[in-house]
Length: 136
Image 1 (cartoon, rainbow, N blue to C red):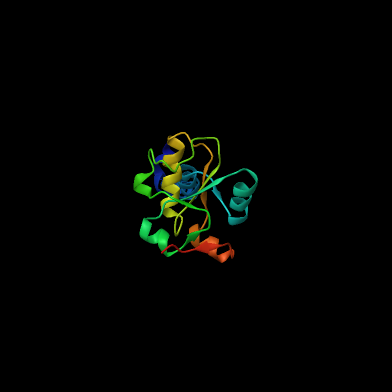
Image 2: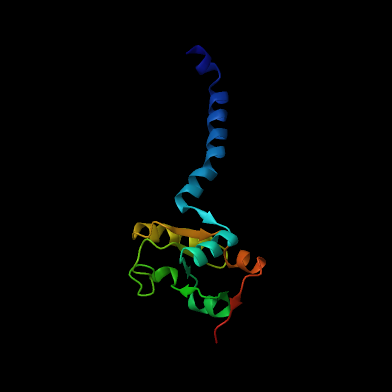
């Protein structure tokens, strides 16, 4: 007990450093799994996955992945473009991936257990030279 009292600052430093090491695991666990562009294409092609873009309509019009359904983040709950089959894999994308992480969490709460985030967002999609289209 005397050791703990005399070295409380070392124990505090050890706990703080352990917490900092675990923090990324805690944060990424709350957002769910992120998939790369190759895995996303496989989900879409092989497992009939649905690409959901949670960008605002103006962002979506400037450029989006071909075949993506635009469901703005604020309109996710009960949106008519969400698939009725909740077992289908959903790949959620936004320009950077930040909004998509929160959207995937909401979709999982709505019963879409296979909702996954496209790591890197639309930027990663473009960097992988995957098709992007613009709407007028």
